[in-house]
Length: 111
Image 1 (cartoon, helix red, strand yellow):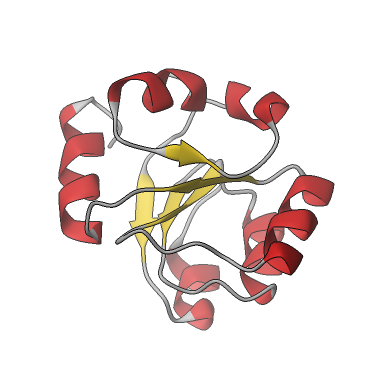
Image 2 (image 1 turned 90 degrees about the vertical axis):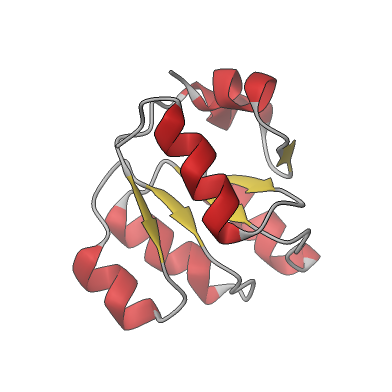
């Protein structure tokens, strides 16, 4: 399942480039402490976080995550969105809380 397909079945909003939605996520990681994300997240993961500053893009690029999802209707500043577009990191937002969106992603078979 690609990120584009995920957008079709889950209540997600694309905040970045449409061209970055062709990635196929491989698992996921939920966390806000950047040092933990760098240690435990894996390439291809969906990363769910409430952190919106530009440093999340640096960490996402370093790891090679498939996308970042911001829960609870959180939207990052324009600076973060612009950097994500530049680095080809897909950014998604949802009104759902982190626990709920994790469960829905898991139900779709992304583990």
